[in-house]
Image 1 (tube, rainbow, N blue to C red):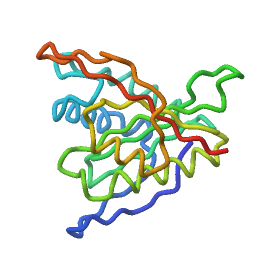
Image 2 (cartoon, rainbow, N blue to C red):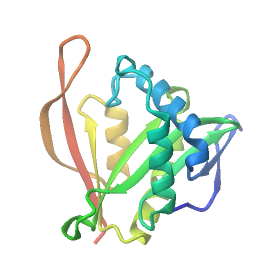
Image 3 (cartoon, rainbow, N blue to C red):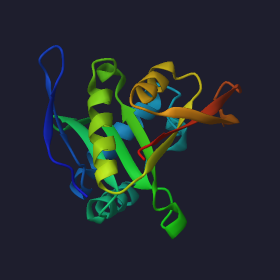
Amino acid sequence: MKIEERTFLFPNGEQAIIRSAGPEDALLVKTHREVTASETHFMAREPEDGPMNLQRITEILDAVTKNERDLMVTAFIGDEVVGDLGVTTVRPHVKYLHRGYLGMSIRQKYTGMGLGSFMMQIALEQARKNGFEQVELGVFSDNERARHLYTKNGFKEYGINPRAFKLKDGTYCDEIIMATIFC
């Protein structure tokens, strides 16, 4: 589904257009995800995993656009994606339809200025309207900024997946499992 377009104003006066990315935006989304993977270790991918598959991203964005419940909240500055947030159904089985899974990335240059909170509020409001009863996510245990954002938006920590991520230097990082429940 597509969300209603909005504008976000950064403290420095720069504007971002917040809308749903569609299949026509696949190359911009691909570039964004590859850039954010190289900025920190907080993303599931590493640059060494190679370029993302443009055709697969196009198919995913097309499927989300056509889906009545799944959604994308994407921040654009000109022809550049600077923030990407998706809420998708955990599994397409009756027993799982009340659950959504959230993934999010923001370019480092645009963190700490309220964009993440703005995008999160849009996504959670729309997820609730779309019939999700809870939204879940996983976050690196050492990503304090993201954990704060999620907690501020109603997420609670429910568990830990120990050593979920093995970093390039051979160390491990736990994944914190969080969820927000609407009803």
